[in-house]
Image (cartoon, rainbow, N blue to C red; front, top):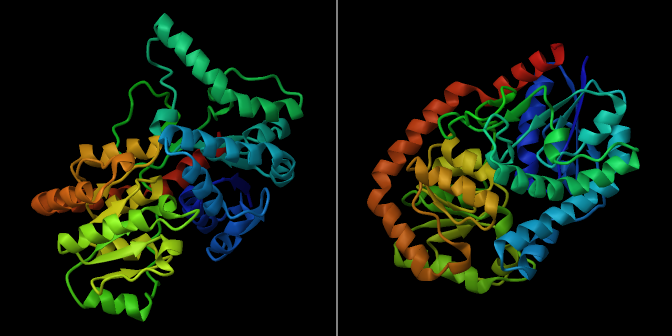
Length: 401
């Protein structure tokens, strides 16, 4: 039995794709180990996957909320979060190295965890890339200016990886491209959402989205009753962007007032601290951790932050979106939704107001039939791709060669 290890850091949205991939690899007869923050042990093990803790035992959602709370600029916020994660990865290289031993393949996530350790041990790698912007356009003719700018950016991005390489006496790299697998790079996005870049090398493969329907989920009786007592509700699911360092009543007020004034019933995920002493109207309800595979099927539309997993789920389950991206990669996913006309124009998180939310809801209501039809059509196409099954097929081909 072939042994595979993979590692990832970040919030639930960062680990969920690798849970889907791990489950399909297990079904295909592989021995799989998934490593991440200790706080994700329960989530991973409940999926039947062998878990190994990597790094300190922290509440990653609280930590990222604190970083975001101290930086209003989305670019600075993202860079600070990346620096925080990279420090954990650097300090955990010995743990990662030990887990990699005696494995047949290392699947390297978007944070490149395990790539250097696999190189030292002589173990083949396969990469996963969630953001198309991170894939080098190697086949594109480069101007002198492109080479200079690319070299400067590449050098900065390579810095944290070179710190790890130094531990093992490896030569520094000039860019992260040098440590990405030349064998296979999996892109878990649908071809019906993202057109393949003609400047990508052949080993960069769009597979389709990875997901699991989780049909067995049974909602809390109060949530089930809410769904059955009126029109389909809006779902507010800002993901990690709604985890608070402190109560954010003003922000929640904007959404609650906008729902009330536009006549929307609503389900709110997140905002736990704010909701401790917050009275919601009868037309709204709070729900905790509920699978998007169940929740989104019952929603009229979703207001979300455009994290990778949430963006994918809206299209998999055929529901339109009001995007509220907070950081750069989320803005990219928001634009994907808008370009295929399953979403209104993205709201700027820095300029979020009750009025801007109301305007977005009104636009959604006026164009809903068209956006819902488009979302359902894309959903049907996505379900023909078998994204996670395709990923495993490509991994098997890569191992054999």
